[in-house]
Length: 312
Ligand code: BDR
Ligand code: CA
Image 1 (cartoon, protein in one colour):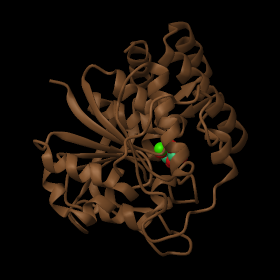
Image 2 (cartoon, helix red, strand yellow):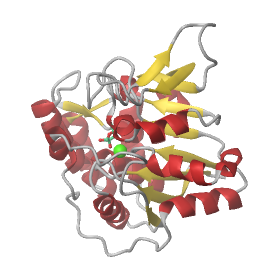
Image 3 (tube, protein in one colour):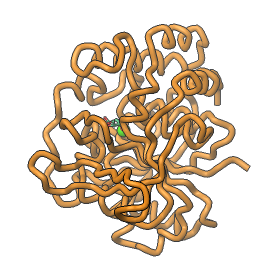
C-alpha cells in the first residue's frame, strides 16, 4: 500500500519539484495539496500548484489556505526570493480549478476521518497547520508524523540565523514544533548539502518527461538566482529544499538526523524566527524533533532522476 501524504505548499519552484515527486512516486499516495502564503501571495501559490499538476497530467485536489501569518502582517519579500521563484511559475496557465473548501477546514475534516495513516508534509510557512491544530487539537492523534522543510542551525537564509518558512510565521512554527507528535525537520543544514547542478539539469532534460523537463527549467533558474544573490556551497548548483523532505519519506537514509529539542524564537530583534536547537545530550528539555544535519547529495539527485522520469 502506498504511503498517504498531504503536502502543504507555498509553490515556489522547489515546492513544485516536491509536488511532482509526491504525485509521481508509486510509493506515495498524494491525497491532496493545501496552499499557504509564503514564497508569494497565496492565490499565486494555488495557481502554481494547479499548473504543476496540469503540466504532469495528474489530478490531485488543491485547497487554498491562509493568506496571512497567524498574528503578524505579511513580511516584506526579499529580492532574492523574487529572483528564485517569481510570482508565477513558467508553466502554462492552469485549466483545473481549486476546491471550494478552505484548506484548514479540509485538513481538519480529512484527518478526523482518516485511519491515522496520512503523513503531513509542510514545506512552506506553518500557518495552515498551526491554524488546524488550534481549531481542532483532536486532529493531532490522527497525524502519524509531520515532515517539515524548515529551520536552520548553522546559518539562515532570511536572516543570519532564521530560515524563510519559520521566519514567515514563527508563532505558527512554535505551535507545530511543540505539538507533541513525531516531527522530522529537514532544515537548511541538510538541504544546503544536497545541491542539484547544471549538469544534473542537463541529464533531466535528456530524460525528456514533462516532470524532468519542468524540473530542469526551474532548477536552472534557481541556480542562476543562487549564483547571483545567495551563493550555495559551490557555484553552478542550488538546493531544491522542499524536494528533499519528500525524498526523506521515500528513503529516510537520504538525510542524517539527530533527535534533539527544537523551539522557535518569536521575538528577539536579532533572532526572530530562529529554530533554537539544543544539541546538549541528557541536559535541557526532552527531544521533540528529528533534526537533519546532513544529506546524501548523490542519493538525492539519483532519486530525482528516477522519479521525475516517470509519467502519470
Ligand atoms: C524554503 O523557503 C521557500 O522559499 C522554499 O520554497 C523552501 O520551502 C527554504 O528556506
Ligand atoms: Ca516552500
